[in-house]
Image (tube, rainbow, N blue to C red; front, side):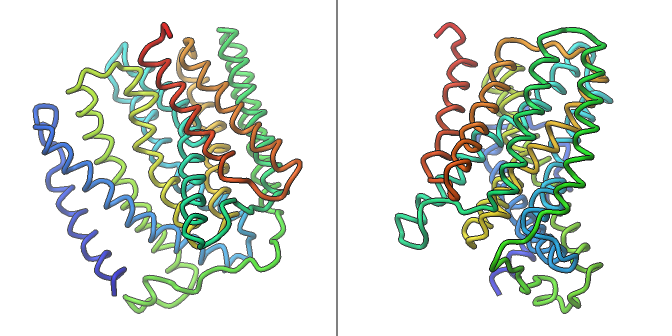
Length: 363
């Protein structure tokens, strides 16, 4: 009954957040902002549970491997919040600021996944290993992971090269290359074969607590409801963490590249942690890498085409750190079938290095 109670609480929280939307948050107290940050986290977490459970069921119904389900169904769904933010910024942002916010949010998304999300996965398996619940390492589908990490390195290299040229023709060529290669990635990922002992949960939440039959349309409905909660929670979190950043005097770069993506990456982080706790390592890691592939392809292509793709030192450094972290994972799975926790924890170190450079560029 715990999950059922959580669902009811989420409905209440969701309704409250909609009713209170539009309050003058920038003049609010720190305590008020902190309370709504916590509310946004709760809504996002509950949505993640509903979404991941529904996606698992759909993956089983369509006979997809864990790698394909995590990299495509889960990754694209959870990538929607951070994909919508730069589009909204371009359409309705203030002149002189909207392009900077859009580009920062676009590049910040894969950066957060390549650093903090990997760190949280490593921390999760480390703590589970300490509690003797599992070994302190991830055991993903290595074949699928090699393919995905190879694509991420390729895509980030294309983005880096386009960022150096400053040419509109180079931007258009890079966008065309990324969009075309994502189509190939999608078709190839659908063909990933399931590994031995891959299973999907039959614990359909809406079926257990609301009596819905275990059918594709109801699984999709639950996933859609979960996604709605995730979007609302992320929106609430972004609104109040933005208020916190501006109230504390954070720079626009910190807001667009670090603060907003940190909030909108909650779905991927918590979905992946949830799957790690269930020892579904392929789903956990594929959700992150698949989201990185999507974000480095579709939103970046939008940015290359519709903005002046002008990168500064900080943004270029972020791209290089993503390449470094993913290369580290790629090299690891080239020699072994499992990823030790300390490899994943390196993402946190890279994030701290970048943060130090962003705050104190002279060091």
